Length: 465
Figure 1 (cartoon, rainbow, N blue to C red):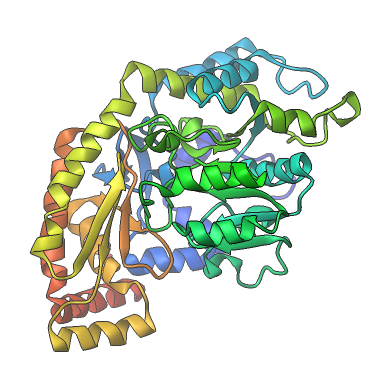
Figure 2: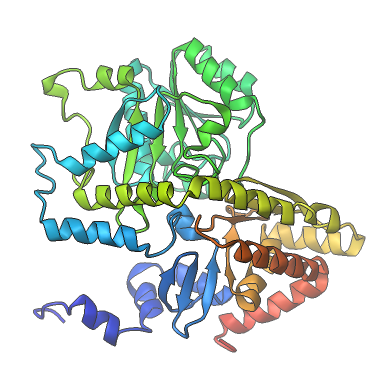
């Protein structure tokens, strides 16, 4: 109430459990509440451990969302917690602003030691979108050129500059005019990239090594070819590793699969350990020195909380866990197992079009069934609600198998998994078995659609929850 001090965190957690949805709908995002209620995802999450979320009744759900890839080392890893506690106990001289601190410098040292030799400096940030924004600014300042290219279907963040590089109209609509000079090229289309670069006004090409929306894996020669074309044209080559980086794909950085040496690398998400927001832009020495080229320009780009000690401590703990627990190799091994268990679904089920991914970044894509009646129904439903078939899979996975996952992008019949890299092999096998069972039921499309309609209709009406 006005004039009263807010209650302590402990008091809130003890006395207000169960109000999560009401508070969100009143003060945050009521439309998100409608989605959660309709799908039956309106759980009270009381905790998390490793690869699992735990609801208020103590049920454990295998979390394949992973906070959009944030929880690479698992939820509530004790080493990350300890690192944050150590910073708090040390009462460091955090964020002096006109000054420097130790932990951020050590983090830069550690990240650059694991990155390609083409990058040699770090610009601290708080999020992935901030890292992308920094890349846009540095590319323009370093080259003196205005345009930035991005790939169709890309996702690079939701602040205005990053949004200008997004390939999805569902994110861009209504927010224009966006940043001028940002133009798309087809993902995988080197000819289109070369045509744009030939205009000699391109500062940078920003690309995800594997696209997060849809988990689109490039052809073998695409990224090396794009890097070569950028070098020849004097444009900077920027890898957005916000989701693919930090051991996710079975390499510390996904760019290692193709031996790339970019001018900039964007990092965030998993670097946080799941605790403190953090981002980082790794930059070539040549580009960095062209931007920060004198004392009067030392602060021409920055962020108030960028480089704070709590974030750096969480990131350093994340790197230690990845090294000590062998999570890069683990992601490669368990990702190969997941592909081995799920690729046969393409041959077994008419509705499964593709299974793809690298490491523990995985997706399954669906298409219409072969039967004339089922296909007509599919096409009718998809015209009204694109991507609905995926929910015939994700909803029963959640309610019947305690597996939490979702679609890989707006209006897509693609389901994506980004599990914690500490996931156990038995959980990979359990997910694959559950997926096969659910897809078999969903392939009986008319009946599956009817069951889904009844279930979601009841939930939307508040019945049977």
